[in-house]
Length: 459
Image (cartoon, rainbow, N blue to C red; front, side, top):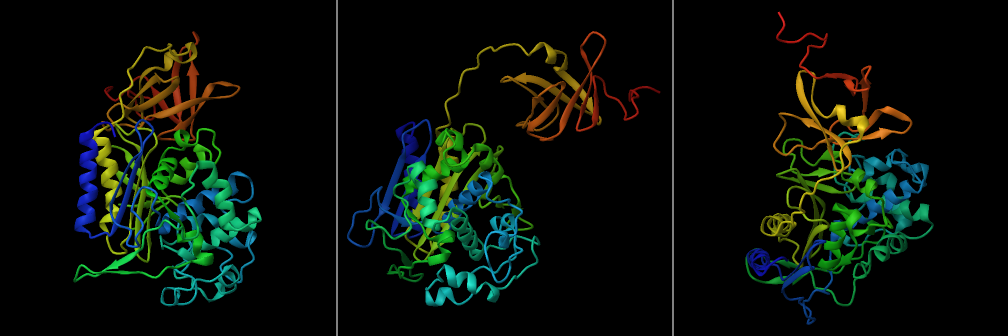
């Protein structure tokens, strides 16, 4: 961190949660591009090995974010389309019409777990049984009706990835994600240097170890073990892939942009958490979003999130909180609190502004105020791009950004911000100056006008 006071404040938050939520082992890491990695471990492993930065804990459903990235890799490589039905690539006895997109967003309507009492027996099906018994699993909601969390759905996507890559999910994960990103401490089987997971008694200070479990073919939903440092780096990748993986060895930044776009919410009345393509999205004040996932397995809870956007957010900011208690719900919120506190106490350094090149001659007459639909918009040249934003919009506006359409000198496309994808058409007068705009087909003029072209102050 930037100074000792910041580290002290963050450390106090961690120690407070460990003590008050009674977490036997709590391992935390904060990753950012402009500071050294910060880690802290509080408690003990429960098995005689030291609790340190190399201690592994289960990350539970954070595993789903890895499976989602593998699916999008397949899409980018032309092996599937997100709107393909499952049975276009995988032979299944039922629910083959569930699309890849709906499985990623938990809107396929499939029941939460595979068929059978998995949580009673603690015996997960292998791949053959998972698929063979799919006709005994329910579709509890109509497809696309609403969010319904499904480990079964993500397990099927893991089988799909293995089928398309001609290997196991674990093999594909190691070769295509873990090794390229240097996540050497992230493993499918339980490693030797691991903490014991506990159920902490609600009415005493006793903690009983939970049984060790291997989730077999459901592994793509919840199997992985890792360290807080590895997971903080992973969270930073999900939020800012260009900074963590500049060569795009794992996934193009544009694909992560697509994965982070909200597709649904977890609750119809309180929009506190959204779902992208396999990623959880938690909005924060000031146009920031924290992207990642929560995780839970017997004896373990995890919260792994990176922050994107917002004033003061540094590049590649990611946080991981891993705990060895299955009931310490404060673990979930702690990652969000640490991210917010880190930005408040130690924001990214401010890069000095320096004069740049003038706008190209073709766009200089576009700059300034235009009126459309009765509202004023200001067009500017910033960072080598034409931008526009509402003149009386919010205090922290997100501008629209335009890029020229090749071969069309008076046509630009909105590539970011409001109206992304829409065209901006320039109309020029006899002297070549721009005298009118059409954006998303709406007419823009230098003065406020009614839709039939009259000045509102005219009688």
